[in-house]
Image (cartoon, rainbow over all chains, first blue to last red; front, side, top):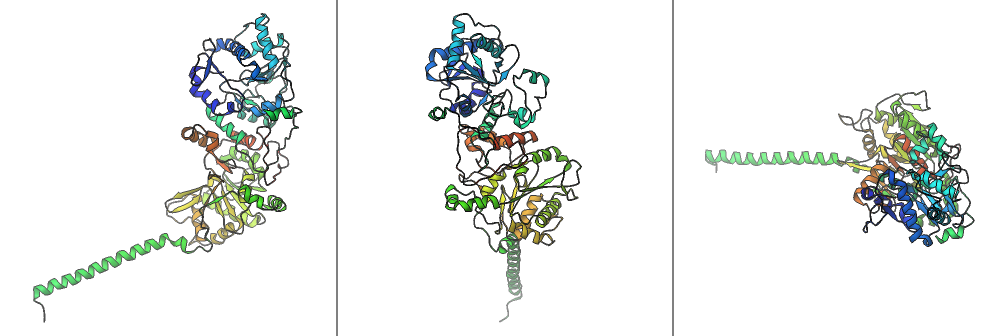
Length: 255
Length: 328
């Protein structure tokens, strides 16, 4: 999700880095821009329009791209995503089942909801239920706080809030930059701990080796994370964490 | 037949003139010869000077030529002793280095200007950087002869020791190697300390041999003004026939960096915006310099843990994670 004034400042760097690993990428904005390209969603920009933008974006996907993919990821223009690790998380789930994943927060909604900035991913079934919810007026524009509002609709429509943690129960979607999570300078705050659905872990075990996302990522950090993830490594090093291949390994390979 | 007086004087002057010209030319020649020979002093003394000015990491083909048991033997036997030069003011960086990359050295020793209660170190009892370096290297030589390679860094340096071992795998430590990020300053080629300095066993031995010679390698330095310690080191090593070499990967990218990843990424964003992460730095980089202590923890995560699921690397060497560590 982006906007006209951020195309050169932010969205461009996503285009040059992680979005290349998606099967399809669509940049959503308030205005059509055929050269970038972006889709114009017939909204104005601003925090109070945020949920309208999300509603329109998901409806657009359902209308034009439903059969092109199994899973639909929404990210912001300052979210960094490692798509291969997202595929690994999703490999054991069937896309027809209505479920969605992200950084799970606890307040306001019984089953919790997913942080907007850390990115969330809907199964095909979940996307269909979302659109169905608006068609039947079960879901509506309740608040402009996009991630809470979406979470309300998901719960009403029976879409399960999934557990995105790895096999050692470490978080994969992250609402802040790696430095914050790893060095614990923010997570000591009580309000953050209270927000997290699962127990907050500080220090190196905050984050899975197979992390999926980070948020509030600057342009420079996009490229740094791309370098750390896909290029720099310790030659010959035997990783401590060696998770099992998912059962649906062949589907993973086909992607 | 004698010349007329006027002519005699003229002839005397013209002969004298030639004589003066001759003296002048001879004097100039003498000065030039002396100057030239003083610039060449190093080159006259090399015994086994390497003809190349840079060394390369071994290619996959080179490594596969070695039989597997030999590769395993080399992975286990190549031992790196890390010399990290610290001062009390570096405490935050010192802590970060202790908690991160230095755990991957076979032995890491911190040499500090004075004893510090919080952390263990070898105190060299001097604040002078060149004397500190001399004492640290002498101590390393006396106490760690079984390590064949010596890696010297500042606490602002971040090093990936596995990639250092990969670089050194097919190099003989009984040859004089002096590697790192090479810089040319006037006539002197030296390795920048902040990017990490690598010395082979033989190079360290030769250095220690010349440390006591105050005509070649004095404690107060050779110039009237103080040279930085990494330049002093290069001058002393040159006397023993050891020359600085830049290290590059198989694509020609620098393996040792005296700058931070952030700095190099920013340069690439300006120069090659279509392939920033691809072109900024080597995949098997050994060092970066200038990261904050927090960012060293991020780099630790980025190097030893963060990765995309599904890539298999088929590396020719095997390095195991260190004991009693959980951030790698």
